[in-house]
Image (cartoon, rainbow, N blue to C red):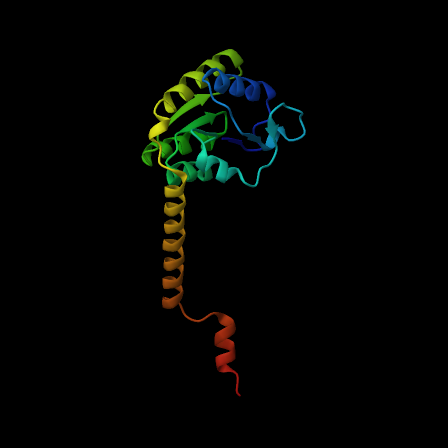
Amino acid sequence: AIYLNPHFRDAALAHALSAGLDAAGLTAHRVGEGYAGDGLAGWVGVDEDWATKAAHAKLLVSAPGMAALSIAQVYQRPILLVLTDQPEQAANAARAAQLGLKHRAVIWRGDGAQFEAQVKEAAADLTRDAARQAPAAEGRERAQMRVEAWVERIFALGADAPPPAANRLRERQPS
């Protein structure tokens, strides 16, 4: 499951990425916001159900944004990180290691053949033991537990907080 944000517009990158995954024996669901309307075969600009497809995928492919890293962590999926000249990508890629994610990074430098070879090697390595991946249902349970933990925390913060300003105003008004 590939997701590339609007920063990605270079059709040569899209072709090399697709070719590398094909060469690794993988089929791909390809979402690239920057490729919307460009007529790139097999690419769609938006997929509101991408996270579900990612949960069932053998491999995630994305720039190292926090959403992609979170999905990889929750669903315990390997992730192939596509790096370009965006400065935050290197820091986010380092975060993948801190999170203990099974990942590899490939860097786009404008050389399609070299990039394709990097993608093929990294994708093959990351999916070598895909049969042992956790089922998507376990990821859904982890995701639900994370949501519940955040909801509990938010309610706990609210219990300790003074009432909102509107409530305080009503309390001061004579009946």
